[in-house]
Length: 231
Image (cartoon, rainbow, N blue to C red; front, top):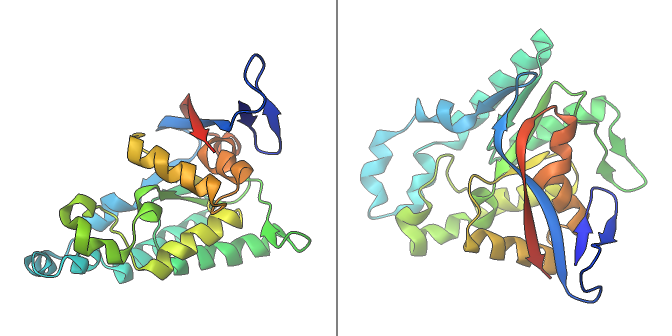
């Protein structure tokens, strides 16, 4: 078995060197005093579009507009602008939109985090006023899944279109999204992460960062747990 760190992969003592198991750390029970953590779902709930709910039974994909992308982007902009203006460090949990990460990418570029040699960002997450995470369900599912899954994936924030989901993967791999939020590990989530590593949708060391190591820089307090991925 191999332990995956932020910048290296090492064999675990007293385990089979030739098996295909990767060991990751991940954090749970997020607590912090130094950084204000803001859950977009709480703010989106205040703008819930009840009228759209009446149409969801016949057209389940309309659930995405129960919490509209326009409302989410407006909330994000307000949070971002206030954090920069007041020099206040915040972490926004559960973004779903490409436009949100483009704003963050522009901000990180202004802080000189862009590495031209690797075409990725290399932020010290202790420094920027705004950092973000994406919820695991918002990269597991996509808009076209509403037809088959229906109320099983009626989340807040909602599942967005495929191109929005693809954007979340892009900025995870470009090291702009700091964290993948997982409230509870299930067999389905573990299988999804196995496939992410196997198919190289997320590289193993990048996954280690967004499950655990980036959070060390943001001054989060947490309970650390371990996840074994069969590669």
